[in-house]
Amino acid sequence: MQLIYKKLREARLLLNITQKNASLKSGISQRDISLLENGKKEFIPVKYIQFLSMNNIDINSIYNDSFQNVKFLKNTEENI
View (cartoon, rainbow, N blue to C red):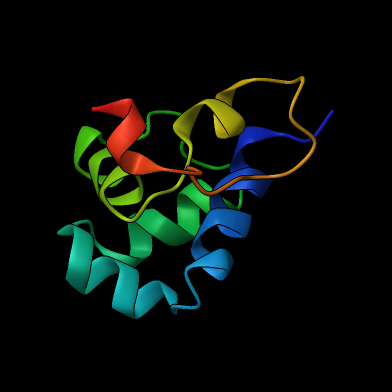
């Protein structure tokens, strides 16, 4: 089982962006992103979830233990 905070880091790395860039693009402070990725902040801001989703990260793969790794959505048009 991979913990959510590790999957959040993996998702950001899949997007190939730094915490600072994720902060600028999501509207969440870099400090909060760091705290999330280090498991020191339990509440994931809705803005950050929306940011990941808008960048085609499969949110279910972050929350669902049956997924070992974070996934991109295969075809976003099918999910609309």
